[in-house]
Image (cartoon, rainbow, N blue to C red; front, side, top):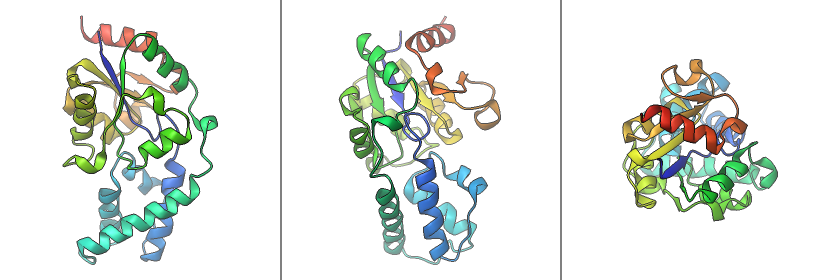
Length: 222
């Protein structure tokens, strides 16, 4: 039986994707780069620094800024983002997620956050979910972001269990790839077009019940 569940945040627990998009769009515009929603799909699940690299590459500005300047640009984007998410609260938790967290606690399953967002602890606190999480992996302390498995491996380590004993829940292709590489069992929130046809999928978060996780685990560990 699985011992831990590793959650992504954006697109799984709540939706801050629109806030990220607007912040990146504003920064890109200041740099003379235009991004649209289609391009923004490539940023989902990707770290702040790597997202900036993708945007600069998109605008043919890959080598225009020093590392220090890139760090300042990434921090500027974060400032834009933080200014827009102050109003997030328990009302913004996706349907079914609170019930799932409660069920996991009742069954003594450990819970970890494996998000690329450095604002994970802040957002959990705003949504009154902090008490459910046994560990929050720090994306600033892992060598590589998604699709590398580092953040999921770190979250499992924070729970003092192996990734193979965990289920990982993601809504991005990069995140699903990271879960698979970590050797945890992936469950995707989305469509086969977005995430692939070879993994368990739900289309809505309220389908993520304890029974669903339990049955999915058993079907993959016969």
